[in-house]
Length: 596
Image (cartoon, rainbow, N blue to C red; front, side):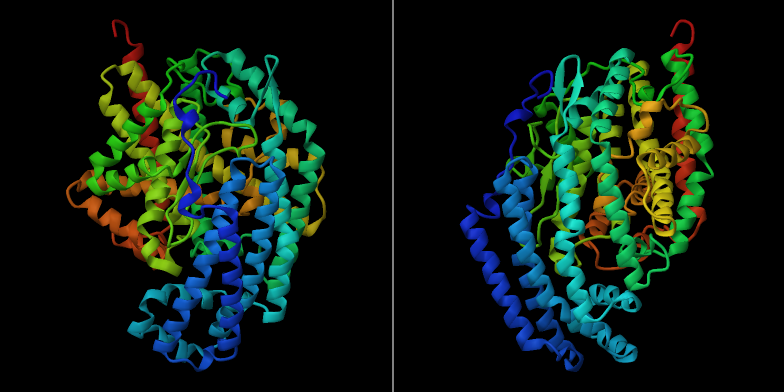
């Protein structure tokens, strides 16, 4: 547990909105399997001949089966996430995954037959009003046409995923959740020891960093093997599909051009000078001769400020409610309905997430709340996701957004809370503390994530071209790509070489990390629009969230005058970050001036 009670210890989610017991779950899952088998028997081989009205009817049945199966999967995953060490929960998750895979195999024919329809006829069908609720979903299926295999081959890939990548990522999650890190004679979870990197006491930060590394090193052989296995698995599957490079499948899923990703990464890496400039300021504010990796997240002011759960709840609800009444109302549902699991407990998955569940249910949020200011921002972040998922449910098959726009609401929510905190503050020193903390998060979201993308690019390329990577080789690539970002402004100790091994996104969703930078820079642009038009912006913003994944990202945000396909767009966001750094530099001069 945390050092002090916050009130979050009793905040546990209520999964009975999904199922009262596992018996009901298994009955529902069996029903979904039966429905999928009947659906396949009735419509396999007929999709090409269906008119728009009949195809819409088929898609609604397809959607309903997926919703039923997804509800069971959601429960099993959430149930496991809060106690990954309990074998019965892991067994249930695996049972549901296997059934979910069987259902997916039965339904696979629909998408495969749809993409085989002649392009001219498909274009005509897509213009029919009956298919408007499914138009973008159908467009996306055709986008991947050249990379889709035969139905028989696709079924094999679906089947082997259960004992392949899905099994290995589960093993990684359970391994890291079970890891304990020694600190001052105590055994801490990953979440607890990493939170100490934000402490004001430098010696505490140093010991926490070294203790974290010690725990990673004890599991280094296992984690290296997991990484190599999943790198090889992705290479093999990409090769079978004919993807030209490792990131292609992620770009397709994110609904953006390869050129857009390249422009984003090029823009961010070209401004690594902002990272060095900021850390030079922070080193000066902390009065340090040399700035180490364990100093990056140190507060430049009072660091023992803690927020009870009630304080965090009220602050975040106020921020959302002041932006828009409807946003505040939806945010309140999560607290009043017990849709959040907040405490740090043994066996619970680390980090935080908002799970969108299925259209017929509501989202759930997992936190590891310890009362730190950063935890308040994390609550704001995940509530943003939750609100996005809640209002987009009506889109059904098109409810989910690509990762590139999935971070929009979460980062925007963080911005609202940050500005709320700044407005409440009357002391310049405290303003500086808040501003520095915000820049810390922004740099981690934009520059660090792109540096991690560079790490991913190197290890995927090496694994495909030369074979397995040793722990030392992985460490070398990690340090090289991290040092490129810091440009000499941060001294990365030898212990930091192991810190590639605990990051789940590399394994759970290869290529994910650049979406954070994408989302942050997009939100900075959207926030500028909000400041220019606070009266009408909230309504348009909620419409954007409610649209879910019903259209291309560049079309949805284009309604705000933003062109995602213009390489110059990314520099607008980077300029906004530079303005934050300048603001901090100016504020630091005012705070440190004689007589201030």
